[in-house]
Image 1 (cartoon, rainbow, N blue to C red):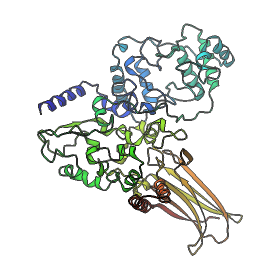
Image 2: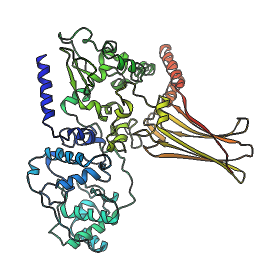
Image 3: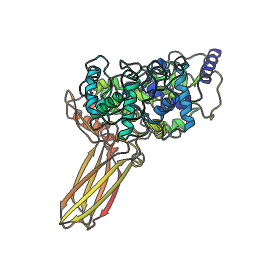
Image 4: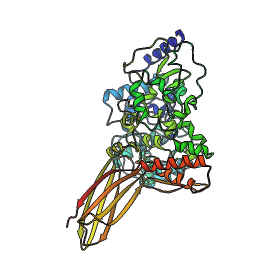
Amino acid sequence: MVRVLVVLCALASTASARPAGWALYDRYCLACHGGAGDGKGPGAAFARGRPRDFTRGDFEWRSTPVGQPPTDDDLRTTIRFGAAGAMPGFDAVLTPVDVERLVEVVKDFAPRAFATTPHPISLGPARKPEADRGAYLWGQLGCVKCHGEDGGGGKIADPPYDLRGGVRRPRATDDRDARRSATALSIATGMAGTAMPGYAGQIADGDLWALADHVLSLARPQHEDTAIRTGGVGEWQADEAAVWGAPVTPQGPPPASLAPAEASASERQCARCHAKQAREWQTSLHAQAASLGLQARLSDHAGESCERCHAPAPEVTTEGVTCAGCHLRGWVRRGPPRAGTLLAAPGYPVQELAIYQRADFCMPCHQLPASAAIAGKPPLDTYREWLTGPYMPRGIQCQHCHMSNREHQWLGVHDKETFRQGIELTASAHVKDGAVTVVATLRNIGAGHMLPTTATPAAWLRLELVDAGGRVLASDALRIGRDLDFDGTWHERADTRIPPGEAVTMARAWTTDRAAKARISVEVAPDAYYEKLYAARLATRLPAATRTLYETALARARSSHYLAEQREVLLTR
């Protein structure tokens, strides 16, 4: 008991020593930049670019010469507006006070660097465009050696970012004048921590502007770089790594200080005190994770690695993803800051960790590394989709949608109402020159990742022409999902998923004079991939017990189908 209290006191002391903006940093920055500020956050491997290591004191986006720290205004600008193609901006969600607090957190990681007083460089007034002169200087000053002729990167060990994708330097607006000023300032200041020197005072101000004109001429139409930079997952702090830093190990003999109910890893015993959470869990997919489908795969000598996520707690593998799988390590219960609904139990070791309220808690089971990529994307890519999407910059974590009031149901694509809340369906139908045209648009308004995110589910946007008696005259459907196939090697047949905030539109035309209206439907098969897999295995010779498992699993998968939305639209003329 004394040892546990000492540990908790030490943790409390560490937390109190952190800057006032730490809670903001934890929500908006830690995923990429890490708890130590070293750029090795749990999501760093999936970020678009290499997150900055604050501890070194080297900052690329400065208005100061190499060797000096950025000004507070430089840091504010970066936090507010981000770096195009690398870091999102948080101007829409952070107040000026929030920004100031985050500036203090960033500076706190490298106090020695910020002990120096910064002196910003002045570029002077903008000069007239001289792209041709800039092209000449590009070669004369040796820029081509690192950046290449076209700005795509030279043949060096650590090439700079691709200038053809546009200028990354943080800025409030993105018109040509803003891009030109940002580019000229980057050339003037150089990039601390890289091979690029600052050219302010080395060449004339007019040449700085001319070089900026040439760099801007290299840009091609901008597109989002969704490639995963490296494999594996990032790093957690020691306390958080104890939760998800490796596969869950056996708890071992329980300490004598624990009561019999506490000395159990079974969900049934957890339910004695956590009745609400247990009731919710019992209806969840986590409770069904060690399903007949998984048992069939294990019986079929496949799926051994699936238990890492489907049954993480070694003592209770038959119970699926249990309380112990997420909360119990070395007989210490770990979880989010408590809401005060339970009495503190003497001798009951509990550790509160912020990771339980961040998206990277979900990452180990909902993100595969780049080494598993099929057509450039792993089969499980949900964490990266969130990290590079519009929800992360708003501070909205997985838990906000899937555990909004700390519910333990984790509702998703298998739940009709949850899926329906994530979509917006609009449709029209009209007749012209004897042809009936139906147009339907399905928008992802509620998912912070692709809809659907994995290759397991599929949705169909179905268009039908119906006569006055309700008989279907013609129909067509668009499959929405990621269609993967395995024939000894993985292949991606199609990827028609809908990114957050975006939409897919389907239009079809038929010639008929009997149609009275159009019917538009959204149908969902949550386990479409497994239906195909189970049916394929059942077409082969199997032991009787394995066959029974597959048959039952297939029936359950097929029974999960539902109609998410349907509407009828009268024809307009």
